[in-house]
Each structure stands twice: as structure tokens, then as C-alpha cells.
Image (cartoon, rainbow, N blue to C red; front, side):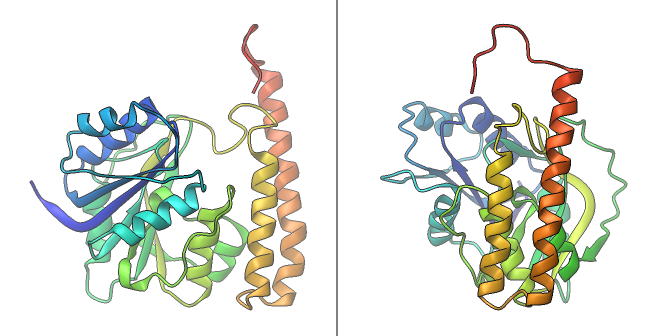
Length: 272
């Protein structure tokens, strides 16, 4: 089995079958990571040991946090415990394309390779696209990362010695902060045009207006404010970003409202 010098870090909190799917996607890689670390964010889920033991990828390291600290802190624990030269992140409710690590590590191990790379991510259980075998990547610009999360965390691979920032202990947009802080601090980052990760739910509003839309909005605004306060965003960039994030928030609300009207929840479904 071909392997790459990568530690795959998967934070989890009561994810059950979703975690099984995520681990299966890691085990099915044509080029496997040399290390997989699952970080249990104090879920109290007795089935987690069994899920990890059933994974086709072994040995698998399971870290259990003593108290719930959020996905950012869980990823930080994984980073601290990692032993490989590269770090790849995967959310427990996402999965990777079987060719993800093979194609992405071609970019990361090439001459003059960037310290950080990402790629596209699909949503709502979209079928995997046909890959043409060509790896095309473009630099992630300052404007791109400020106006959009162009590198969702399940698409990110970063060289371990290039990590300058750790994930904040927040529950929304902590992954966006991690990538933005690195890009804005001057680390060269690229985005591949292949879709090599996916989620089985929409990008936002999976269960209606209360499904983290408000948290996402506050998290994005908190990220921009934090980066401005640290001097990574200039004041003349920060001011229009406030308006931009509010416009995106209104757009998301409109999309979710239309989605709910077009396909209302089934009768008898429990409230969140």
C-alpha cells in the first residue's frame, strides 16, 4: 500500500455513522496517510472505541479530551500529537475522494511546493466528478480569502513546520480563521480545481434558519475583527468586510427561506 508522510486529523463529537463514513474514505485512499488521529471532544459516546476499532486503517490513534472544548481545540490536540511532516484535516461529517491524497500530495511534494493547499468541496451528497488526471492549482489571493472561505478545512493540507497559528477555541468559523490567518501572514497557498471532498448536507441551513446561520455570521465577523486587531487586515479592508458579510448573511437567509417553502419539513419531524 502506497503511503504519504501525512497525519489525518479528525475531530468528532457524537458523529456515529458519519464518522464511520469519514474513516472509510480515509481507508479507501489510493495513497494512504501514514497516521490517522481521531480526537474525541468529550462526547461521552461509548461506541467511539468500537467505530475506531472497526476502521480498515490501523493503527489508528484515538485521543479523548477530558472536557468539551470545540472542534478547534480538538484539531489543536491532533496537531500536537502528530508525527508526520504534513497535516490533513477531515471533519467527521465529511468524506474524501479516493484520489484526494494522491493528487494533493503531488502538489505538496513537487519542487517549490506551497506550504498549504486546498481544493473544491461538494455539498448535498453530490456525486464525485470525473477526474481528468491533470492537477491544476491557483494561488489563493488576499481578496479571495477575505471575501469567501475558499479553503474549507476538510480540503486543507499544510506542512507541519509551516503552522504559525493554532485554531481558536470558538464553535463557528474557527477553521476559516486558521486558513485566513496563515494566508494573510504570508504563507503561499494554492487551491486545486478538483472536487476531492464532500458533505452529505447543504453548505448552510441544513435544518432551517436555526442551523448555525447566526453562528456562522457571528463567527465570520469575529474572525475579521480578530485579524484586523492583530494587524493582518488593514482598516480600509475591514470596514467594507462588515457590509460584505451582512450581505452574505441576508443571501443565506433568503436561500434557506426559499428552500423551506419549496420543500417544507415532513410532518412530525422533531424540532431542533
